[in-house]
Image (tube, rainbow, N blue to C red; front, side):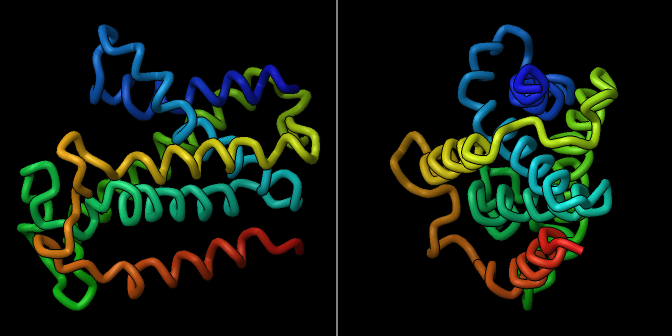
Length: 192
């Protein structure tokens, strides 16, 4: 069963970044840096859902929360009007929330489906006998979270040493946007 967790750990970034074309095969070394974030998140989401007896609705809710955390708090692309020089918040901007409707829907859907759900479904279908059982022992289930949290803290720093969403260039209001998703995560992780 640990074999499934290792497969998911490396498959999640392959699907999320390489299959969708963000990286070419010549950048396969990036898998070592992306796997803790994507793979750790996917393992954590699957383990929480399976250990609490929840199914796909809980996994999709947690995957959506993963997208909010990654894009809202880690990379901060949901709130930064000049993120990577792409001006992602230019269209349909909602000033009260500090987000753009098309960008928010797109990036959260991509993370929910491609970063988390598809890799979990692929690995579970490769091993149908263990599809609904936890893959890690109790203490091992916290390791992906620890690795992911360390990577997430380090990731927002750009090559120039500054965060991609500096307060001076951003109308950041993550509290209003993230709180409803945090409540959903707590509800999804609560045993029936």
